[in-house]
Length: 162
Image 1 (cartoon, rainbow, N blue to C red):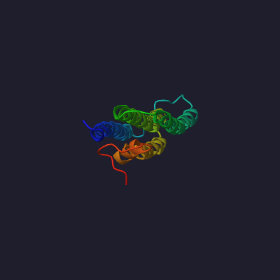
Image 2: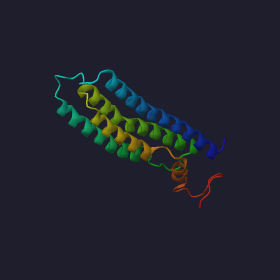
Image 3: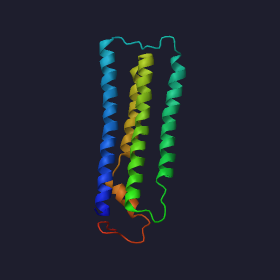
Image 4: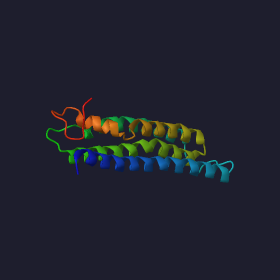
């Protein structure tokens, strides 16, 4: 298998995983709407819990997940001299899957807030944050290919410099 095929195979796996995490966002939306429709009005299960404390905590954690994604990607995608394509493809795959998982966290926090309070507005705000992150960090083959080509002294077969 040549280098381009190795990269394509890892990218397909990363794209499938990213779509899997995206499908969980759809599940959260369906669950939220089913709960709202079934228990009209849904007042949440945390009647004795101070909702505001959790709301600020989950918004801070959601913002923190954005920071963690940026920092982690920088660390995980650090290039090493003499790295072969299999190691590079593996590194891109792992980073992509971890990034997709972390991108889902704001929606998960929003869903927990909805369950606690019964207020769906916070869920949809944090869902939008997750959608934005998933769109921003979705594994794109053109970016993977450019990242692999960057800084190489020569281009292997299948990789062309424009």
